[in-house]
Image 1 (cartoon, helix red, strand yellow):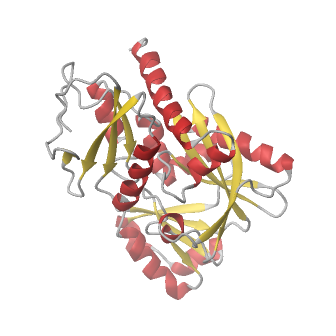
Image 2: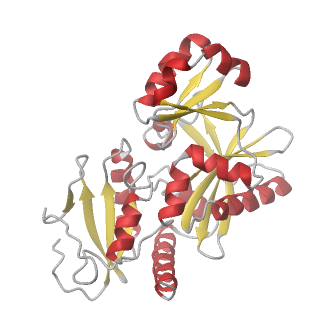
Length: 337
């Protein structure tokens, strides 16, 4: 689709693909967002980003260009569905800020903080929000790591994960000292900074957050993985990889606390628009935040849209609301800057 055609409807640029290892997830999510778009109000403009970083209009194959400081824009508002680095980490958000184009989801700061699990956990911990115990290992420090020291601190099992990767890519659950070296090798394939974390004994629950200045929380869902943890395949590929319990069978008081904690986490990390907060609930009802996803999945088995549907907001209404929030934030920021 050319960026020079005149349109009466608002043009929504669907940014998908991307250079990260989550490229294929993004493609799946984009198809669902396009299918749910209210075409009475919006016209989709599909923009594919290749694994090499080339931006092209999907329909015409023409390259996408940006004019800074005014001029023709590829779309009136952008909906980035770019999971992982070079899309969810503030890079694309910064480009769109400079181009003066409204966009769905958190801004540069919230995106960057949410993507880096080390920074995210430190910010949450400083705000008094419980997170699992962790240490950070940088690539330059790898040779100094003593497996026995890590196991002595965290016990077994423990988790090893890249600092800036989502969708459980590069994550390993380590059950013995012999598995630790391979787990570190896997994580360092995706990042130069790796987290080693204590395992939290409890159920994994998730909450979808929606809004700008006054964010709201969905009902709580529970993930029951069929394997040892909620893997990439279970999240996006295997329809039978996990059971999703919506709403989660929780004590109502615990569910209310989880919803409040999701909103608090969202605000602590300076997020806007949307986010999915993943937590653990222990046997005694304590809540531990695992992470936030600032561009959650929109695939057929993704929790974010499912949680809002169960909360009374249809898929199409959700997409419309996210676009409206992007426009509201853009106008509010323009009044200040």
